[in-house]
Image (cartoon, rainbow, N blue to C red; front, side, top):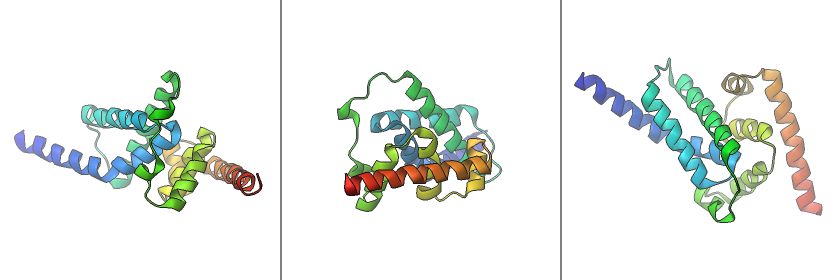
Length: 163
């Protein structure tokens, strides 16, 4: 029993180390407040500890964590009252690259349905089929959201350039 518990703790530590940054970015892109994103991650890892799901492979683990992060973030957004300016972390703390900061800032302006697909596709490197499986929507819906998200991003860039 002791050995099994030690193995679980080692696996849990590896999962937390490997996925914390990615899950934080996903949650932060949806909610826009670093403190909320941190709380959400605690809830995600707490669910992982309580449920102790068996994952087929690394991709299954990653997909489960992303799905739970999205759900927890949506739940938090439903109950969040007022967004306070002092709660918003500077992007420099989250993304060191200036160009990534600018793109991420623009992604934050998009509706949630486009944010998450753009985040998973461009920042996390998922393919449309993988995103469809994670979000439980069709690959066609993912492609359509990517298309609409890109159009909205283009409008943002055009407004910034000529605005």
